[in-house]
Image (cartoon, rainbow, N blue to C red; front, top):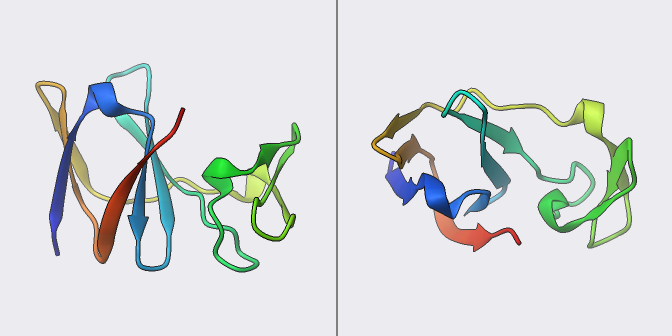
Length: 98
């Protein structure tokens, strides 16, 4: 399983895998929130969807996902001197969130 490394200064960030969009954000304690932001309908990136308050509309097919249904993952990671190391199978690329 590959270990992906990046700086906390790059966050928020999306880690694109073969089948998922994983969002990484910092939390107040200096750690990370790691969330699966993949639309359940057709696998679209909810990170680039429209925020509708209590839900997010997928940019691909306009399917709405309630925010309470989006879960943090148990993906293992380490933060050391502002560098994040995360184990992520099938990693393809980084996508910067504006």
